Image (tube, rainbow, N blue to C red; front, side, top):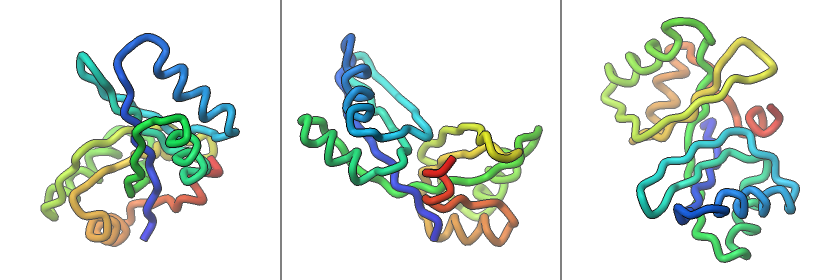
Length: 144
């Protein structure tokens, strides 16, 4: 299966915290491939796809950050109108629930890359592959 290792970092919602998190990654020569943040009044969750998730996780934990690694899918969607609908329609028709997603555009081809956290990674990967949807491997993502 084409699973991608995503790092989720609990971040207090106060000035300088994102700077601290990104500095830890910089100091450890970790390259961010995709990023998303969701927040509330008091805290946020910074989700990142990086070129070396295990090294990043270790560095963040050594700095007393609360960190988890989650398996997600990276889906290549044609960067044109209706590209995302095709994937969402296929998931809906097969009973797959999307917990969250975020996207970035690859500089190497005509696809947008959408990171999906779904209810069942294996089932979703099979459904999408059978539908002709491009699934990225972790190596492809880390090299983008």
